[in-house]
Image (cartoon, rainbow, N blue to C red; front, side, top):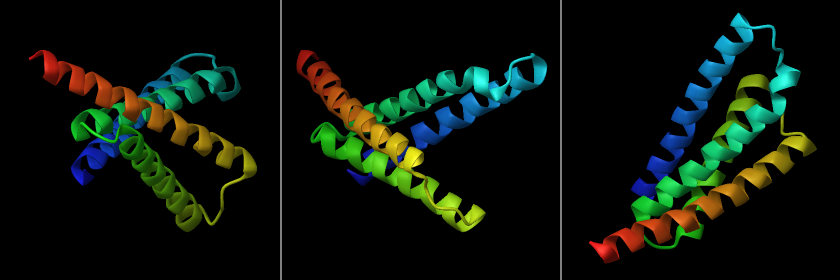
Length: 124
């Protein structure tokens, strides 16, 4: 169970790093600015959390909602600690809203991941 959550969190951070690298290049090499790509970046953040929950649920093979939820909570905790300890700032109301959405998205990803993983094992 902990291994499944670990895989989910690692998936989230790897996909976030890749997306950040791509957007940094895009912002550097084109005339786009951050405000024009804000919704795309938010969408990819939600997609990263969904895939993290999906991987956690698929690896765990049971209780996908709990694995996805734990993955989302661990992600939020890491981001909160980084922001609080590194930048001496707490979450704003807007950030709490985003992270609540991230949690729900990771839970849904975990539930779908369990169902995809169990349907594959039944047909094999």
